[in-house]
Image (cartoon, rainbow, N blue to C red; front, side, top):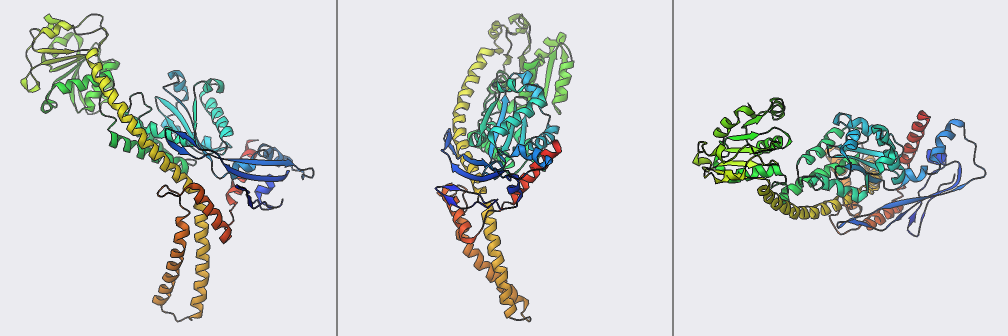
Length: 543
């Protein structure tokens, strides 16, 4: 097959040398032209991105040479798209996900991948024909697969089939709940996730730790490549920046966290460390109260519950916290010794009425002189009549809602600020990906200049004779390096597109093609050959 080269009307044809694996892979066709064109921009919340597509034109040859059976079976799967799959200038970043917002927990449980199995999942995904890189973000609230796909359509199809096989859920059922985002929208989504904007509790911090874990586990795993690792590392930076600049994680936005926040607001800050905390009920809400108390620095508390089993499990989870279990029969004794009482039981009738608390001993003035009852139960565990006792104050769920709503509004305002940061960081990441396109030309230009420098230096030194002092030899060598570096500085600057100046990607690519022509830096198709060879071998093993 003759080599195809040249450019016309904004289209660039890729040279495919005769006899190369690329040419052999396409030997059943008389004409192969791979051409690229720039499409319109797609924008999401102000963040722009560039999508690139290629088209492969193929016409059948009447004189196509016969292929042996083993080659035919492998190449049959490649013939329609082999060239455009492996020679497009830029692959697509794709995220396929199912989250708590749209997917029932029963399905998320089947899709969940334990952290220890993430490396295996990455390798399996990258063994798919159209997937180059991959990462898995699997938490209790989401299951998201991030890939770099050589073909968007085929890549998505392969990943969906892999997810179906792994979970036992039919593809048709997965498609009812999945979401898919491409390129800059996939980038924007991960940045929102890392910043806590996609969480049930806006701004929560646990997800950032989970994104960090993806990078930690992915290090050294084949398939956790430059694009995906760069994306997740940038997401960590975004998550940290959003939390630092907006303080979005501050303020309670759940009933349990609001209960703790309200109680601490009513107690002098100087007394927080010595306040005697009592939690009645160790169910789901009670456990959350305990967690929020620990998060606020509380290291000792009493928990009243019917049985000790749940309290023991919480104690084991809260390592280093002194959690004292007391049976329900001794509840009033514990109330008499407590400064703050949190109630979260499923009792149908009140546990505390006016007559139950009127004779309790007063609390210290150091904690405000009032015993606080913070009731987050529905129906209420503490009757409103308890407020008639001058030494007590009762707060119920309705009182907490005001705190929650006020904090939610504040977080929404901060979320808008966070989106502006994410838009900015998304553009920077896209600029970084754009800059990768010129890396091969930069390397080739440097290598070209270095070959000339070394050749001319050898000529110069040979003319100067064998008795040249080392100092002189070093000086001449330094001189040649300095001249080359200064000559290359201008061209190198015009090959970089990292968002630090006003240069657009199209200008940078024009400069790249111009340098390729001027210095004869033909595009190396070694990568093309390597990819085709690897895929053919993989298909032959599978068949």
